[in-house]
Length: 89
Image 1: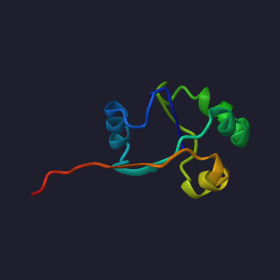
Image 2: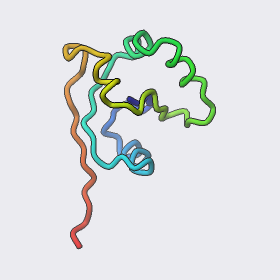
Image 3: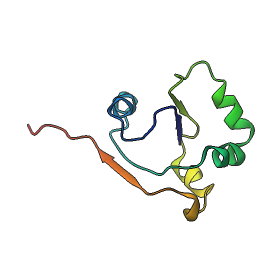
C-alpha cells in the first residue's frame, strides 16, 4: 500500500521509483484517501510525517495481505496491472 502525489499509477516516473525499490510487477487498485486514513488510523499520520520517505511516494503498508483485508472489494478501484518489460537476452 503506497501513498503518492502522482496523478496516476501509470506515470512512467512512478514506475521508475517502484522499480528502484524492487517492485517490477504489480496489480494496483485505487483507494479513496479518506478510507486509507480511516483504516490505518495513527499509522497513517506517522507515515505522512516520516521524513525518511520521499514526498511523492510513501509506503503505508508492506504487508499486502493485511492491506488487502482492510478494504472491501467494492471499495477498490479498477485493477491496473503492470509488468516491467525486460529485453530478451
